[in-house]
Image 1: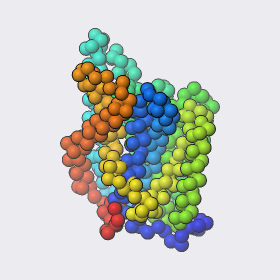
Image 2 (image 1 turned 90 degrees about the vertical axis):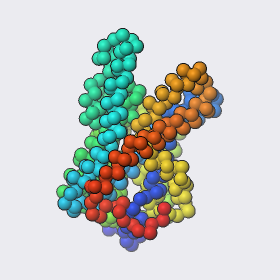
Image 3 (image 1 turned 90 degrees about the horizontal axis):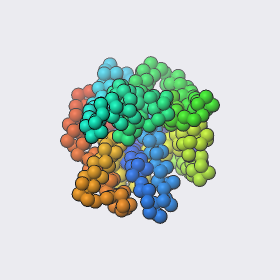
Image 4 (image 1 turned 45 degrees about the horizontal axis):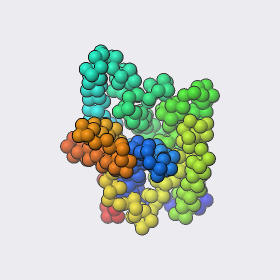
Length: 395
């Protein structure tokens, strides 16, 4: 039965099929938030004043999760009757994720420890990188987040972002099976159950292991709500009557206000009990409304900012930029230090220099390495893939 304020029919399929430029813009917002969080200067009065807001940029990962759940869920839902459903899905995901990921991880576990061993005259296993990060199998098997949630300790600086990619890969293993074999009604109940399960799991872990906030932040079971809410939206777009634009706008304002209040009162402090139990669910709620609002207003003036070329460009580079920004930062600092320039002494130049160089590295990675491999995805197309439809869309 349609909810109050809903339209009398499902949202037009053309609203969510084809390339959703607004979602690419939202991914640009997400990677910009994460990048500002990583590169924000720790000196200067202005930067110190704005630091609490800038370091809230970690929530960009939560936005990534919701968008990923929506897009991957939509692809799986639309192709679930395909005879090559599993082959095509996994082949396309492998081509998109594995090449850069494994090149990155293997290079780090070879180059960095050997370099440290040579500099400090220690064995490979005694290098700082290995002591901080442990067995490379954790990362080769996309399980780095599990190690970190168990130990409560971050790995080496370069490996720190891999936890979210690990969660998504684990999600990709489970979601195709659920969507293939469950009816829409049963799938909806399972997704709602997962959304409710995550805060309960976080609460139980808070009681059992109060000193390890990493469990709530990056344990897989702690993050099912962010991904599941995206899949639920994909399902509802295809099966349910949904709220009209006015109702969505009110929901966006309400959840946004709740998020602002949580931030001002310390409720988004990842070490605080509220964020550890409810904060991630609050973010999931706000971001799923934001994503639905962007789809509902696709091509309209109100979402024009999300179609800005530079933002869409960043959204297209987000995977490489997310993965490579830390090595790019270190490379830039060491190169400038060799030239006698201490970049960190100039906060504004440091911020924009690091962002600009990271974008340049990600751009090169995409065009020289990722894009040629990504083109092979065309060999694994399924009928009814959402990206192959919606002719005449406004972008």
